[in-house]
Length: 245
Image (cartoon, rainbow, N blue to C red; front, side):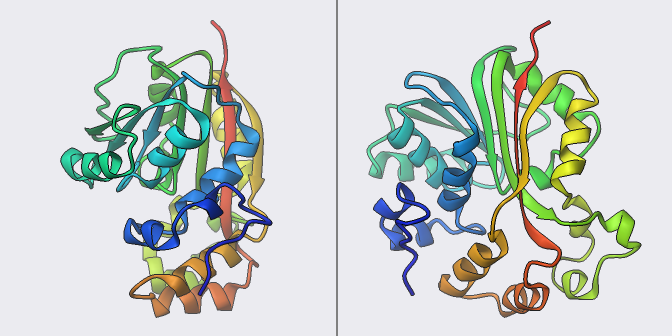
């Protein structure tokens, strides 16, 4: 099954699909990142935090495609394991792997020009207090970009987690929100200005294609996505700039 889609993801299609699959930790990270990047403005030499970087695919992509200096921070993947991936990809001079928990980041205030998180923010970023904590590490005017599982309607408004979703992810679905929810959640702080908040076009189809292609496809996820068919599920793509004091 081909994961090369130059019509939609030209940059990602230049990467060996077996390499991307070997770093699998969820829906195609490079497709999500390439789509998110249409709403961001990264320049060579910028310092970027890749928050929840997993095994390193997104950090490799950021360094190669945009010429930025990356700090790849993840809790689940040891730094030495990520460093091996970065070294093999030839970007060890541009990317530093750090083992870190998202609520105890070992960085200085105003350290980054951008913070990006791909398919990870749902695990740590939904609390009311998290954005105010995270933007401390962004310089004024710095950019924040998140791609996270999203919904077309809020679980709260539905009154319950739909059965076809609950059977697969259980209570975790309460951390999946609409783009409108994210816009309000961030802008109400007055710490950032949201520059885009959208549901990825046909994101559920990308998610389904990727799941079918993985070495051990999850039939339960496939069934969930096929049953939903984009009615509720997708990916929320949110970007913002930190306001000046």
